[in-house]
Amino acid sequence: MTAQLDAARTYVAALLSHDGDSAPYAPGAVRYEVGLKTGFSGNHLRRSLSRGPQFRLIRAIRDEEYRVEGDEVVADYLIDAGLFGRTLVTARVHETFVIPADDPRIHRIRAEFRLVRRNNLIPRE
Image 1 (cartoon, rainbow, N blue to C red):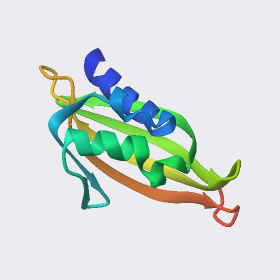
Image 2: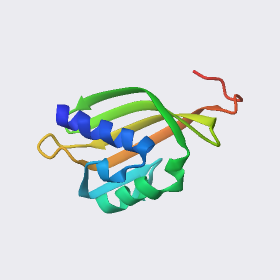
Image 3: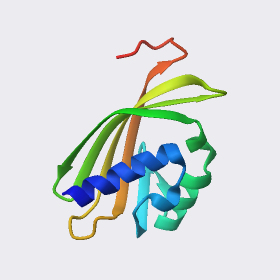
């Protein structure tokens, strides 16, 4: 169980550090974001995480909660994103990782998110 949690936590930390090589992806790993396939292999996910402009906007990750349910790790957290040192959006992220106990690498990610706050127009929860 600890290795599964470590894999998920390492991935979430890599969202902020942009170090895709640190994330423990299985070679055939895939990622779905809001139902759309956005990651096609472990190597693709590493490159995207390291160089993708969408990840450069992440300024902070906070309020992380994780739980293990068999071969799945469920993560809930907040992401603050913005530009030029200013947070423009806060989103609540819910990710489900398939990380088998006998192969503690990320095989699949299903990500869902919703805005919590944008330029103070959406009140914080």
